[in-house]
Figure 1 (cartoon, rainbow, N blue to C red):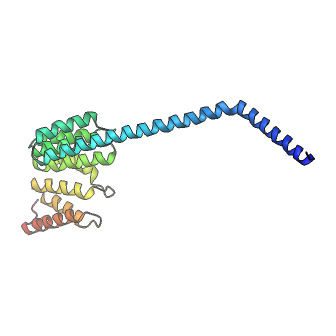
Figure 2 (cartoon, rainbow, N blue to C red; figure 1 turned 180 degrees about the horizontal axis):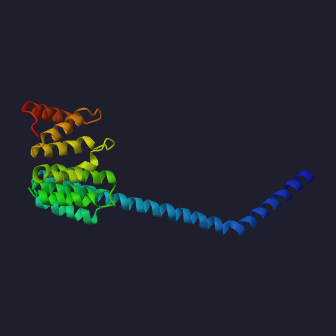
Figure 3 (cartoon, rainbow, N blue to C red; figure 1 turned 90 degrees about the vertical axis):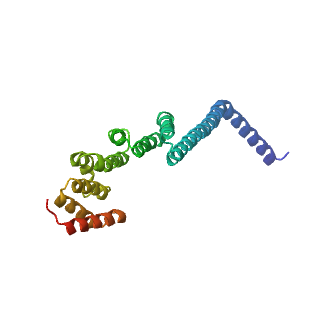
Length: 221
């Protein structure tokens, strides 16, 4: 055997001995970490599957409740929505609360609907954008069933120049003012809507018609 071959064999043996020593020292740790990774991955996959299944169940229940409401089966829809409020996941419980309020309004229970929307608006656990939408829905209902003060209590905070719901909030205020004979106030609000370049087109169209109606009849108050 040449010196080079001998040296190579010695080096190989040394490397094997070093590798064996490293494995004896760190092998259990490596195996433990690998096992943790496998268990964590399995746990995450299982949780994701469970969460997805629950979300799908809530989505199906919400769709079924909407179908019942569309078919005029309001009591059955309310029953399904109440279950979803209690047992749903993600955004579905809040959506169920909002839809329940709408169903109450469709049934002719305006007071119950307003109370339901007010409850959503007062819930600090719900995102502010959704709470503002609930305030606006309550304001629109109160145009027909409440006073200008009732509408203003909910709509005025949304009517500032920086609020994205300002056009609709001003429309609710204007309609309520017009209903109570406050024509000058109503006209001013409708004109604010028509002058707003960011107002939704359908809201602008309604405001334009109402402003023309008021001007045509004369503003006496």
